[in-house]
Image (tube, rainbow, N blue to C red):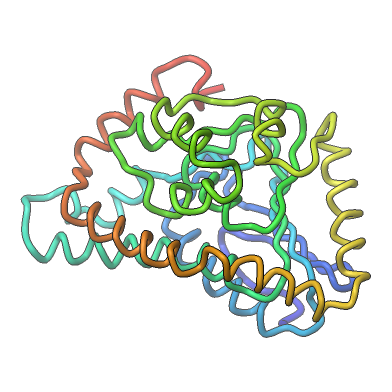
Amino acid sequence: MREKMNFAFFKTEKQDDILIVTFNNTQKMNAMNLAFFEELPLLVEEIEKDDSVKVVIFRSDAKHFSVGLDVFDLGQKMPDLLKTETKAKRVKLYNLIKKMQLGMNMIEEGKKIYIAAVNGYCIGGALDLIAACDLRTASMDAKFSLRETKLAIIADLGSLQRLPFIIGSANTKYLAFTGKDITAKEAKEMHLINELYENKEELDKKTLELAKEIAENPFDAVSGAKKFINNLSEKIKKEELEKIATHNSAFLDFEEVAYYFQKSLQKKGVINE
């Protein structure tokens, strides 16, 4: 791996065989813009090729882990998605969804161990990301939401396909049907979170300790365990991710999404703290 990987959305720091990846869109509460989805596969590809990296931590320096998809950035950089209905538009949307799924699929399918350390909001696309990770830790201020429902979207980046294997189908339905926020304590009770810590400082410290503990084990055994556990559900996840990409590319209305996204910004306590 290059000593310094140059990405707009991510900052990286190597500590022995641990790579710490910090989100770098703090002015927008780490909203996932096009740069995120373009860079994530490149980042994961670099990580997977580097034999000196065993464990990766995704984290934030900001008040929030991530508030999810940056709908406005998407609309500005791909304005044709908001224009008159055409077949070409639907093909482009399908390709976009597959592109947005790619980095998260690579995390789940990779041989390295990926840990998400969550503080503050973890909404929508951010929940998709942590569901693709192998382990999840959080501080007590963390809040989680499968918010897509409230934005007129059927979640299509992996939450609906991965969460049933993590928290069960009933809990996944609860999050998907309501779109409500759940607390870190509720997330721990659902088994979404492996370890829960009092504050951000403890979260960062203890998550690094967890990463080091994992890295100390013979890595072929750790990576092999990941592979065979994931094999149990790999085929069905791939099939369902393809189905949701096809469905949303046919039926997703970006004007409706933008409307509900704007509406959500006006509500107190959603993302305008």
